[in-house]
Image 1 (tube, helix red, strand yellow):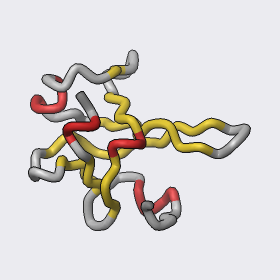
Image 2: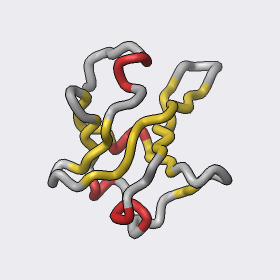
Image 3: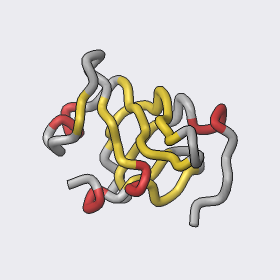
Image 4: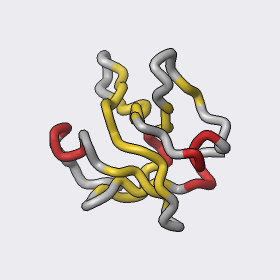
Length: 85
């Protein structure tokens, strides 16, 4: 289970895979308001690598990563690439 982090500590962090591939920068987080469940990370400035993962993309060209793919939050937001595809 991921420890609790304030929203402000996650925004602006670099998102990387556990193998170290850069994916982009966290712009926002979407969540279900009724239960508070986190759903997705909104990633801005997607790298060319993330575009090959066939993820959902917004009209603003931001990529939506499922929250369930997050492994750790520290200096970076680390995600499991296996959980993205």
